Image: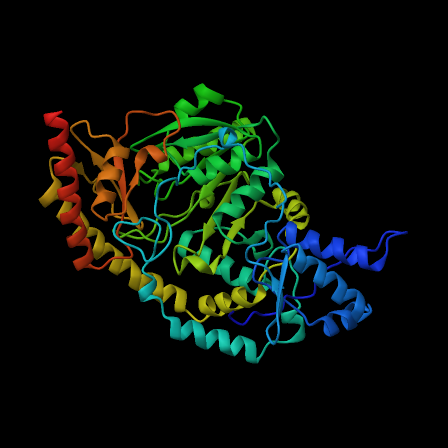
Length: 485
């Protein structure tokens, strides 16, 4: 019998009046075994130690152990101790089962999401390029100089020096007009969407949603009981004309104007002004998700929609999880002053703490210029990798895939031609070890867009070329099977 580690202290319920100590202890131990709190193979403390800990006589403990051994719940071996039997036939508590018929299908269902990234996983930055030595030095310095106030900080709005640094960074890099007091630090865009949806929208309110668009936003709004109104995306982004026809008096709109997700188009100035006009007329607010706006490879990054807002109608969201590394879990919301208190009040009821240590390290990373240098370096790297991917697709898959000439982001859409369905193409690629995401995972109502989302940021030239070769084999084989069917 291998050595077993004694369990942590077992919680025993208060002894009912009129119940003997022996009966009470027997019922408690047998119940703990039956409901799985004491698992098979768990070693119990010696009877003397058990009795001393629970202030019982050793004779009572020995009597109960012996009875449970007779019934097959425990086994005892001289010199080895007492443990829960591996073969005990005990009546396990019946567990409630989830009704599968009520489970909504996950947009990520069937996708590989863990383990090392393989081309063309679309949500990974180049983590191998991240300057870990700088981050480690900053983190070490933070801890060495950490004050009691810093270690006990509980600001639901986020670490104030980080908000100061972020306000300055956003003003310079994205044209954002805000003060640190308008910023709320979150764990990422998904938490930001959930906070805004639950704090500012009521059940039954309508919101415009890009179609196709980010399914995480759809999930957040539907979880809050909001009516999601699909609005088609064209070559200039979300169609304001269609939105007005479908829900003129909607309370909000969600959009990704810098680099529409997943189709990649950038919203031009005329369309930006049009949606700001609608928001002003309807008294609505706009949720601007600037998830990778820093990465534009031709010219300067486009200013945020928020920079054009004159009526405090834009809520800006962003994240460092895609810029730096996904496990960082730091994002932000920039709120108009009138909307700050409702969001903070709601957040206070859910999550009163911010993680000051990682926020302090990120603050130093920004203030000392490391973030700006890293973004500039990776912008050049990602642009080169996108160029390789576009070249390979034109050379190998010209008749089956078409990549638009969009120079931005961490991923690109590749439109399928010749009637190939998105999900079948995704499955064919997966059979060759190539990770993609079918565009129909992002569609709400539309049926006219077929394609694959291909990430390039995390993969070097050799990996991209090799994966493109595999993708060629996968889609060519799929096309051949269609033609002979």
